[in-house]
Each structure stands twice: as structure tokens, then as C-alpha cells.
Amino acid sequence: SPGAVSVAANSVDIAGSGPLTFTIAQATADMTVTASGNLAFGSAVAGGALSLTSSTGSLTATGDINGGSTLLDAAGDIAIDGGLTGAPLTATAGGTFTVAGDAVTGVTTIVAPGGITLASLSSGTSTRLEAVNGPIVVPELATLGSVQALGLDVSLASNGPLFIAQGSATAGDFEVVAGGELTTGTIDATGIA
Image (cartoon, rainbow, N blue to C red):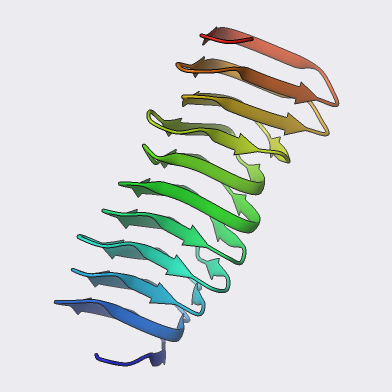
């Protein structure tokens, strides 16, 4: 579609051969949207599973992205200006991954070589953040389980306890601040750990 569209249905399954832009996308049940170009949303809400994929472009949202089991995949960047809800959450970006609002997830896996920035993350029993060519920044992290954070430079903070099972900062510091008990496994850093 050359312009922005809106969609609301019980179930949504859309595939586009170019870029797609939605002012709003809503599904009472599951939603799958795939584009070969950039994929942009004002907001996307699914009562069930949510899968958003851009095979050659970026995935952006000016509002919230909310779903049950949530899969986000983009060849470029993933940038969400609102909040993100998904349990579990699996996100893979070819560039950076950014959420400006609150992220509330279950088991979480985020892979974004260019870097990961979350304003806040409340996650489930397992959290994996991997940015081999960029920083990882989460100033408000609350999790029920273990965290793996692998990036160039890592900065994590929590008002409560944290268990860092594995950490690596290949070109900088690995900084963790916890308001509660801090437990660590293996942490490697070229700077301060």
C-alpha cells in the first residue's frame, strides 16, 4: 500500500512485497505481518501471538506494541517509541533495538548487533541481551531469573536483586548496579567489570 492503513480483525495475516505502514493494527487473536521493505506502525496490538517481520528493512512504531507470544524480526533496526509487551519475547534486528517506553516481557531474547537500549525492562525467568557490535543499556531492569548480557559495553541497573549468569563487554566496561543482592557468574570486560 502506498499510504498508511488501519486494520482491525479477529485474526490478522498480512504479507507485503514492499514497505507497509499502519496507523493502527489490532487483532483480537493472533497477528502476523510480514513486509519485504520497512514496516511501520502507529501501534500494534494482538490478543494472541504477535509476529512482525521486515525481511529487508526496519521495524518501527510510534506507539505501543502489545502481544502474547511476540516475535519481532528486521534486517535493519527495530525502534519502538512507546511500550512493548510480549511473553515470551524474541527480537532479532540486523542493526539496533530500541524501546523508549516500558518493556514488560516473559522469557526474553534480544539479538541486535548494533546495540540494545531499553528505558526499562521487566522480564521473566530468563533474559538474553546480545549486541556484538554495540552497547547494551538498561537503566531499569527487573527480572525473575538469570540475565546474560553480551555487548561491546554494558550498563545495567536494578532497584532489586540481579543474577548475571553471563556477561561480556568486549570493548569497554561491564557496569551493574543492583538495589538488592547482586549475584554473578562469569563476567569478562576489556574495561572495568
